[in-house]
Image: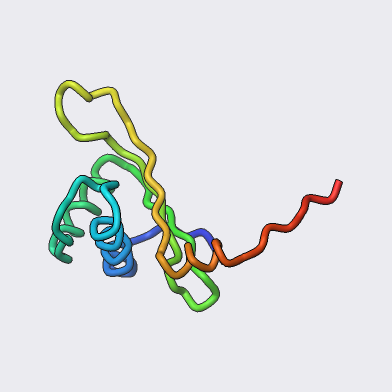
Length: 107
């Protein structure tokens, strides 16, 4: 596995898949309907404009396993000083983590 900086052209579809899974299976994004690929251009543009990195984790085959970023939390005037840190995992990678037995720490 390696840490990378995500780009729109290389990772927008994978990030969108992770977002849409979260929308369909949780309330984490406060959305009710899956997002369309068109929403990824402004999402990446906002990150770029605000100099906010989108960091990803790829496996040996270049599959995006998850990503993390930060930014304003609900960009409303009342929350101008509030920031959030998000991290999202691909469902298959998350399941792989859950299926991996914990190893005791040697001491």
